[in-house]
Amino acid sequence: MSLRFTAFVVVLSLAILSSPVAEARDRPIEPVQIDKGKMRAYNIGLTSVFTLLSAVAQGQVQSPRDAVRHLLIGSAAGYGFYQAKRIAGDGRTTEGWLLANATSSIVENTSSGEHPIGRFGYTVGPFRLRVATPFARRAIAHVELDWSVAETGYLYRALDEGDHVQSRDGLIAMDRDSLWRDPDREGSFFEGRAWGVFPGVAPGARETTWPHEVVHVIQSQQLDSVEPPVYTFGRDRDPSGPRRLFALRHIRLGVTHAMNNFTYERPYQERWGEVEATGLAEKTPVPH
Ligand SMILES: [Zn+2]
Image 1: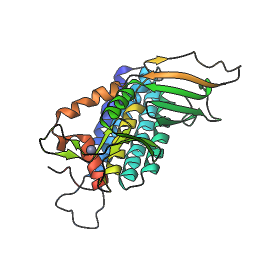
Image 2 (image 1 turned 180 degrees about the horizontal axis):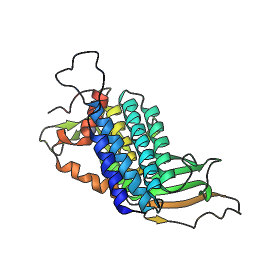
Image 3 (image 1 turned 135 degrees about the vertical axis):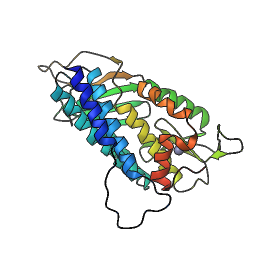
């Protein structure tokens, strides 16, 4: 593989995707408008690049053509994640979460050399269940289980800071009996929180709070989808033999989550996750 060519493609895609998106407007621009075009472009551009990096880490890029393919699939996935968050932000949280799982599956499949729809993955807390479809090429079992170290850490924190474990909209919710204290501001409180894929709300939370937290959950799922495994149990599939029923397959650390930590160095109003979740759920900029 030509590394220079790959780098060129990455830079080019970023340049194209970060340029302003032209949109026809049939009404005057509001004084405070959420720049949804920009959010969408960031989702497409970054997911594209990170899908390629994940594919490189998993040995799936041997030619410039492979690189372009992963960038294109990553772009489509970025659009899918953005749509999933938009739908969840509008209150259709179950639908948004399912779309996020389907989109993650395509990224995980292609970046690991699997058929794009060879497996359908569904996240259950720190685990990801992946069910083989008739298109599966590399699956060694009908159901494979992956484990995320980062999401296990979030589970621990969610259990520590939440009061009730509930199942809601296909997610494991960690609700609480009282508001959460805002660590950044004295006398300020949160009526909802999300730790990785574990969202939670407090009693009396506004109607938009749960969708806001589910947008955060999808952001976390998006980061998990481009994380290459750090360890794989078992070998590649022996095509002559039948598939097992179940196999523990991959361990993922959460390097992408660590890379995202820089955002928490920024003031709350400027964190990309808050700008996006507030924009999509409350349809406003992050309140000061
Ligand atoms: Zn938030």
